[in-house]
Image (cartoon, rainbow, N blue to C red; front, side, top):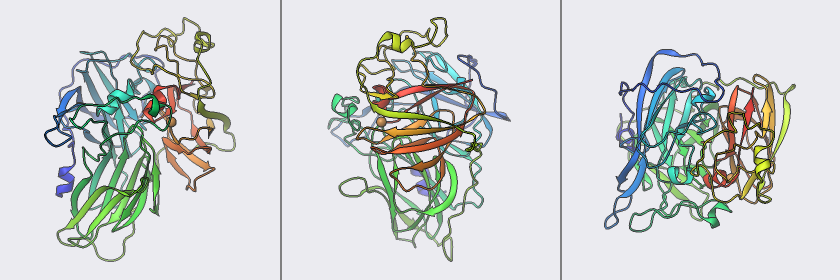
Length: 482
Ligand code: C2O
Ligand code: CU
């Protein structure tokens, strides 16, 4: 193991952590269990405030909220390995764990009220599922997203088993900025200027912590970089200098390797990159070109004996395990992402839902929503009167059927659009030259239309922009699959 592998924040959590009784409670519709393999891997996550040094003295420690003692835990499991993850909530407000990009039963999806009761302070909840797809994923709360993600409630889930030939080393790079005042205190995570535009940006950029990342890699080696954009607002454009670089996976799903020039990543998007490192002493840099001057996300110095000779060819990963949509018979549904047209009335909120519907009878809570409705999907905004009433679903789908969603952005801002519980194929994009690939989040540029296709899976699934202030201020909905 090289020092870079050891150095990144957040080690692998050991298996065998204590798991208490709390068996997952069924809430909402339960999808059939996916194939599992015994024995399960147990993880414990204690959501709590943990003061952590992000800025140099004389600034004080910053009041991070994290899942483990180390920020940004990275957990690793094998494909189809059963995970039992106990979340214990020591935060002053309710929380949950959403497993972003993982196809799982809907009642394990971690969305308070839609898929489970919120995990209140002092309570716990155990997530129990087996990830069917390999790749680079992550988890985060699905409540008060600006405040909880803003304070650091994030971790990576690596599902192993996709390499057809082993890489010599691997690095997990988690990009997230921090909204800090010079004294280390938090600045507001949600601002009206930001929420109504491209989102509120951090004041301190960070990779695996507070600063641009520096590390070492073996010389002349084939190294896999797993890059996660877990920022709340920032869109980046990734490129590599000092080494040949190939894209090998998008949102965790293996693609036929293609040379990386630059690649845009909105919040929640991931990219696996293969590089051949330089000779000892040489450096390679991962840069963000989406800023006035390219920002070095990571600077890696090669060390030791050369590991490889000859030309570099990225070792391809296995393709996705996701079912292929039947494009010929797929039903097409349009979705328009826009600014909100005005207030949402209670009748609109209730829509066709009967007051007896379990989804209409949700509890009073003011933490999951923004105080102001700014954004909409198909003219409907996630209501800002709390979760007492869920809005009607944006669409009703049939499990096992294929769908093509046509996503159109009529705003001047990019929106990374995410559908829970599914992996979709990106079929076309009107303003970007993209290969066909599988993903769970796709960046919809201003005035762009993108087509995605997937096979619907049973359950209730959130569908939203992943700029957290956009989802918090209305650009969020759900689809019901029966
Ligand atoms: Cu990372 Cu609702 O999503
Ligand atoms: Cu958005």
